[in-house]
Length: 217
Image (cartoon, rainbow, N blue to C red; front, side, top):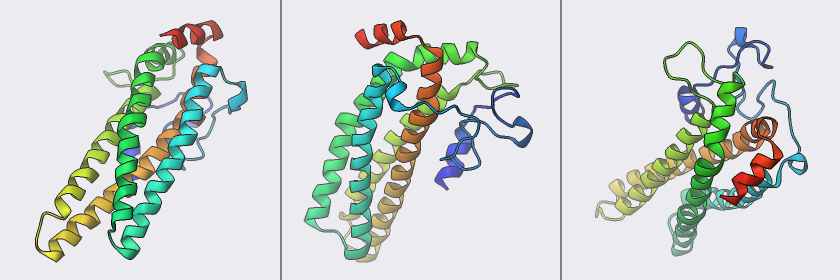
């Protein structure tokens, strides 16, 4: 469900000669397997500008938190809701609010505006539509979707224990856990797309001195 939703909002369509098989409906942001995008030139982290390496380093920490969050969700499904698991969920959402959102905001201000312009100039944008969109728009959509999903999970968790009826509580808790899993998958795919698709594009289209200037902002 989550993969189909990500593909639905994905506006990017690469043209022939850009390394994708357009005849078969492939694009770097809408691959047959989301974790094996075709036609993307890989760039080792060590070869990227330190500006981009900083984002990638933060992603490593984020994925550790995402894994811990997913583990807590699984334990709740197996053993029920406990104070210890509640504390782990609270830690994740605190981390999300303080670190994830701040990270996303920096990308949106420092990197994405220039990258969006360069992608359009390079032909890496949607074709045949009134509104021109690029992989940057996909990343922005995913930022918004992640915040929305996190809010949904928190709201469901808050509601779950307000009802005296045990059956109702379990239904709402199950909904919270399901949306939590969707959030986990979205965040993992988002990090993968940035590290393996968007950042390599940025490395190719933005010069070293421009990255230096972006880092001063």
